[in-house]
Length: 291
Ligand code: FE
Ligand code: FE
Ligand code: ZN
Image (cartoon, rainbow, N blue to C red; front, side, top):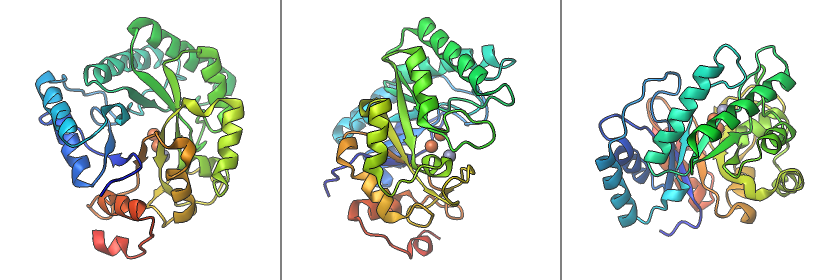
């Protein structure tokens, strides 16, 4: 079947198989793109990138019609550019991560802007801008960092598009873009039922061309809850039809869509969710099929 949308999910990345393993996992879900962490998201243990495996993966991509420019890496969430005690650590780790992503031949790295943990939004944004400038100055990279829109849990920055815009404007780099996350947008208070209206608002403030990735997740909570708990597609408060209207929105046609929905028991839901999305038909028995 020809899929007329770039759709994939979060997949694993292991020391032994690296990009080859990630790609195989994505293909097993019927995906045509994917996203991964280069190691555990909550720690800094990272393996060296094996160029042989990367080459093998790129050959496999060619044979399977996978466009490598749509693949996404997610930076670990221990990076917090807001936090002054951890500032040097976060910058240095992000610099190393950008180099790894570049070595893997991947274009986009998603980053959570950070949590100000009591410093206040203004100071938090100051620190984020300082950190990002430092990263771009010391890497001269071709990788684009995508700031993710956040749910506004705790003291998260990026809970509205004004905060994202402030960082983009101040850092002013062509290597900085945006990753939308539907669960986060919903939980932070945006009504996604009229997604075109949201996109217009985004376009006026920032410009739609800055959106390089969309995380497609349903939400366990109601709009504006600031909770950030992802739900399987069609089983949450955003709902199947709204999520479909986002996946197939013409203005985001070339933008990869990535599922970060929860496992059902021990099993990934992605093969079934991708099937529902490509069929544009909700299957309420999905959960039973996965179990
Ligand atoms: Fe994220
Ligand atoms: Fe996300
Ligand atoms: Zn989330």
